[in-house]
Amino acid sequence: MRKTFYFIRHGQTDLNLKGIVQGRGVNTSLNENGRKQADAFFNAYKHISFDKIYTSTLVRTHQTVEQFEQELGVSREDLVGLDEISWGIYEGKVQDETIMQGFHDLVSAWRNNDLDVHIENGESPNQLVKRQKDAISYILSKEDEKTILVCMHGRALRIMLCHLTGTPVSNMDEFPHTNTSLYVLSYENDKFEIIDHYNTTHLEGLE
Image 1 (cartoon, rainbow, N blue to C red):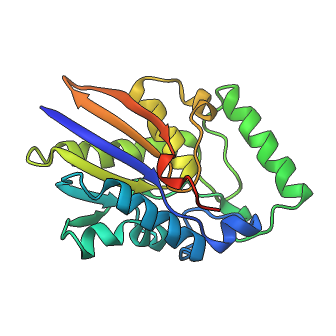
Image 2: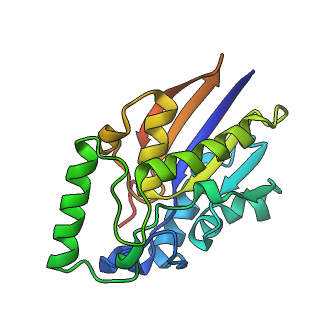
């Protein structure tokens, strides 16, 4: 069985712009620039015959891919396994010095392979990997879906790319991301391989 996955991060939101922490529990919409990014991605990839779209349960991913649904009629399904990691008590807060230090300490722990560490009331990478694997198993079970668009979130996407490609999750920061950046992966013989790494060509000319 061979499949091709197009993984993108959602378009920009005002909270992205303002440096306010978004996570699984913050359900914000795209801003004007995010809409432009989504338009640019659609225009660059509308020629791809996607069999299905999978998104997180959060509206910013729905809005990023809605043109594929509305104009091309591609079916979309939400999966909780594609939701962003939960940042717990940091969600919805401005990234002040205290929170920035907290993030620094957290990411340092993750880089040291302490992958059960999380923000208070938040989620660890190991917890996220578990629900992501459930989501991927579900998608792979749909044998008639060969070309798949997946829209998700920045930190979640980095972690997803790690375990799909056999990269240690502690190395998640090796995968850059920006709003609507694209990774294309092939899947065959139970193996994922990146065939297009961090493609942002469609964003050229945007602010």
